[in-house]
Image (cartoon, rainbow, N blue to C red; front, side, top):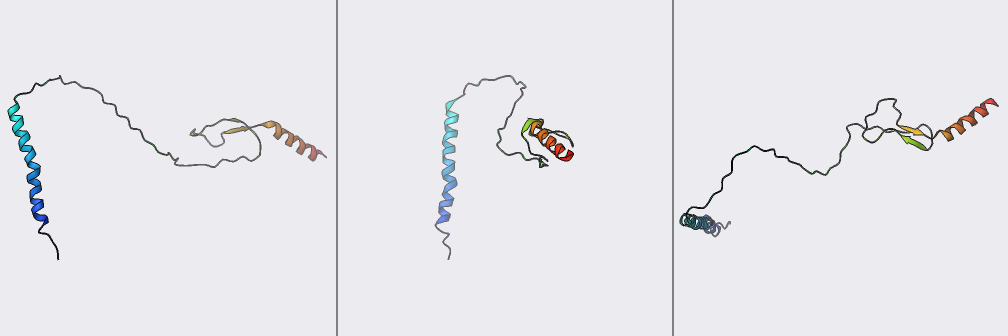
Length: 111
């Protein structure tokens, strides 16, 4: 069985309580008289909006890059976010150890 009867009288009083403050404020506004007003000429102005956002950017495409030989990196020729083309050199390795390996392989082949 539902008990609706006690709630209905309370709901009927809520609009009356909310409106009573408005009547007093209107009556005070009429009795107070005119108030001074300051006017300003209309002008056009630019409004700049800025938004600070925190997030993570993800690339539409990614590529995994690996070296065919081991070695110490001498120079990095491309940075994160740079556009690169196929065959473009991205990293230059130290040639000293590579040259030693090449010379050793050449000497072994000559024997």
